[in-house]
Amino acid sequence: MTTTQPGLLRFVADKWSLILAVCVGTGLAHVGTTTMPFQIGALMDGTGRSAGQAGLFGFCQIGALALGMIWISSRLDRLHPGVVAVASALLATTANVGQFVVHFFPLQLLFGLLTGCAFGFIFAATIAGAAACKEADRLYGIGTGGGLVLIMIVVAGLPVVANHFGSRAIFLGIAVLSLLCSVFFFGLEKGRYCESTGEPPWGTRGVRGLLFSWVALSLGTGAVYSFSERIGRHNHLTPEVIGVVLSAGLFVGLFGTGAATFVVGRVSRSGALIVGMAGTGASCLLLGYSTNLASFAGGVFSYMLFYMFLYCYFLGTAAQLDTTGRVGALGGGLERLSYSVGVWIGGLLAEYVSYSTIGLLGFAGCMFGIIIGYPSLFRALYRNDSTIPDRTKFRSSW
Image (cartoon, rainbow, N blue to C red; front, side, top):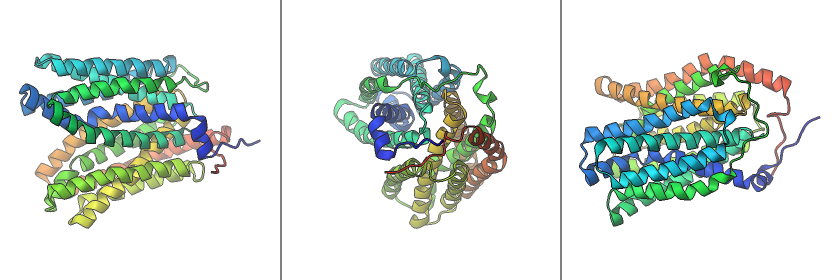
């Protein structure tokens, strides 16, 4: 006997509080990384920090976010995601208020570490709160799209705050945002489908293949996208044109999350994962070998489209393998770490070889993910589909 899952509109109506929590949690969790250029500027202009000191601050905050997600991933089956998210949002609020007040560099590093941990915990809690949903792919698709909208609003609004209240007011703005977002996290509930086996998250069948593919993807794309601005300059594009293309790419990413939301249940999971990874790899080649505005914009737009589509499916696949959310949180943490390593490798390739080799690195990472990571992952998914046929195979209608 098959179970018919509700259509998209019915799904939104039934899960609106959880959807809002996932949208806000996804957006807030990425605020630290997306606003890092503004934070670095605030430290240098507002407190006289050097570029090296500001760079160390950024490394500490992003590193703490990744390590925080990895640390808490094995504990999510015993914690309530709503409680974790609310407490972490309050921690982020306190740390950024402290950042606004203090000028002592060691304390600034400490507050940066606390902010990174808080955002990492929020992201992990958001993943855990959505993982038990029977339509986790769809929920992650909507949540990631909503998170992108929140990020775009924040990126557009923080410069206005800095112009009116000074560069250091950036931290106060992040503190206020974190406090306001905490209200939405009461919509996160511990899933009734959560089952803890007592094993570490990487012990579940298929998880290692998923994590390998996720890390390989992030390492390559971290190098490509982080140097996309430099690639545009290498193609003799003006900073204004590059800024417009990169900003438009965020809007294109919404179509990727929308596609993941719409096609779930209509195509096989393995087919969607292959299309997402292959498309991302091809976009890396196009971007790395771009020579003019058309190829550069095509590379950026196709990258955001396929990457955001694949990202939603990776999170949904993690929930398919482990409904406690531990695998998704671990994958998200490893993604941040491998992304930062990719940025470092991309810098070396750009300095000593060429920008086109960065595109090759992104393509190679995607191909390694398909060839090495996907076989064991697909075998595990096939076993799940054979033993629990109603888990992902459903009819979807408007």
